[in-house]
Image (cartoon, rainbow, N blue to C red; front, side, top):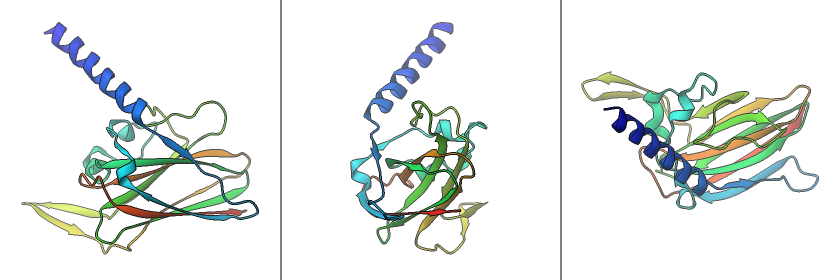
Length: 185
């Protein structure tokens, strides 16, 4: 029994390591003199990332009951948020595609963590269609705005913002447009 437990932990570690090695984070910079930028992307350029890290209380991104909103391919970006600023990130999915957004505010110092190896975040936000499972296979969903949006504010220091665009309900292909706006406070 103990051998099976150790073997399971070893396999889980190897899967996490293999996933972490495949995860690519694209650095972003806004055009010189601009506080607004736009990026077009496709989930097909991403990889599936296990979401267990996202429910830890030190990350607090989403509960396990919402993992299906992020279980498809994920495309990751990173941008620096200047001190004394507000960053607004909006992602518009291709029509009919289940694509969602999350972002982690991390320290601008040192090497920031990348999923699935995130153990903490200064703060985190996720944007996906809000719904409730009513039992018996019945699901009640709020109207979809057609975009996903998160926002962070900085007072005295810069931050590293990790942006995740994730396929929902197993989605692995689909175009999206990511808009980023940074304003001084």
